[in-house]
Image (cartoon, rainbow, N blue to C red):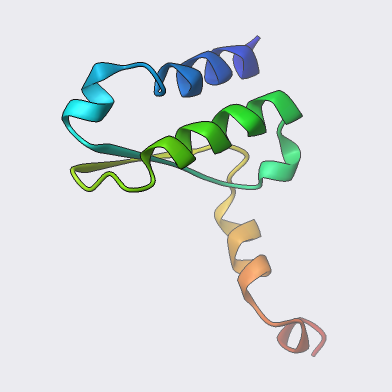
Length: 81
């Protein structure tokens, strides 16, 4: 149910005149691999449609954990010590 709502809102970015008028760039932060394929597609479409917008940034965190981000950024050699 919640994923359906997110999908609906990401898809609405494609037709919402305010996104174009205010040049809102939409980006998702988090581990996309944890999300359903149809939601990933909706996110990709919204990001692609707004990638050149420079007015405002709308960052949406889904499947996001700060700790996971740190682990993904650290080189493996630091983790093995």
